[in-house]
Length: 226
Length: 226
Ligand SMILES: [Zn+2]
Ligand SMILES: [Zn+2]
Ligand SMILES: [Zn+2]
Ligand SMILES: [Zn+2]
Image (cartoon, rainbow over all chains, first blue to last red):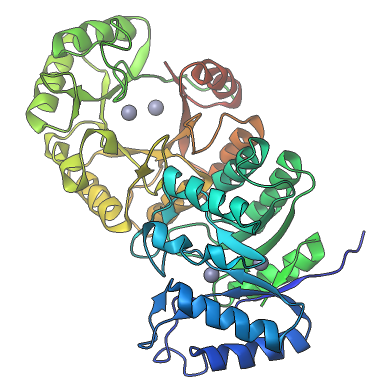
């Protein structure tokens, strides 16, 4: 029943700035150094956001290209996952880096509330991002911010908009979306298994919630994220 | 364990037009006639949308005022519930009729996808609609399109943005949102009971899904909607 635990590392989110936390790696050099440490410690997936020169989140394909190249040199064999999240851009800009063919990319398949706004992932944008990932042979990591997103991912798998064996990340602890809740976590795992038996999953929490989720994850057969 | 079954009738949704179904009541006279029939048959809550002269959904307070007045005369004692749904308007227009003080009003507390677009209910709009309902002493019917909406409603109840004893409607069968699924339905009921033990609930389905949901509802102690 034990399977190798994939550690997924998100060294730079899209929200914190140097002003919040001077230790957050922002430049590509800082990101490579942090990822190399995590890779040496056993992390196998690097979930990547990039920042512009002012430290603000961006979807700039040139930035993603430089980071990918640097990480491939520094961490050979590590799985590179680009974020297509909406904090870094809007509309199709969010997928402009997909032709760079990372191993994986994040994909949110529904909409929900964030702390101060609507996280907009309309049906057309979702289908377009999925089709770009299919075209470039990129494995999506489905970001499930709510229960219906698991149903939507399974439906997209069934009708061919996603490749078989989907990989889902349960995102919990975001204000105005789903809190970190053990019953929901267990129901997420059971629902994914019911709808898509060969899928894999991991979980991401905000701040202190991540430690709690990692314990549930490892105990439940999912992957951990740090 | 049996409690009186409240029948909630939505005679005119926001989507169908006369072109889709000539039997859909659109004018206020047609709505009053249909609601009177449902009231005579035992329905106790009328969930109301209004249309403009061209038959298109609107949030026009003058229309809501005429319909409310006509229904109070035709169906004395029936509970009048106005829709603040986003198909009939945008932003604060959606709550412009709340000063008319209906008994209830629908309130969506999160965002999700609809068949062709994002159903936007950003945090500020949700809080504003809830505060208008508190000010006018209107009981909200929380429209739960996804699981996190139940958590959000319970949180709003706990921190005073909603009045105690919330009333939640589970909405299932909307494309790109939550399908009609028995396990989810049971989890919705259990979660609401866990988070807000004194709350009540009903369920709404799209088309044929409504009949299935009514069976689950009546068996599970919820209210039925026709
Ligand atoms: Zn992951
Ligand atoms: Zn991310
Ligand atoms: Zn109802
Ligand atoms: Zn409605």
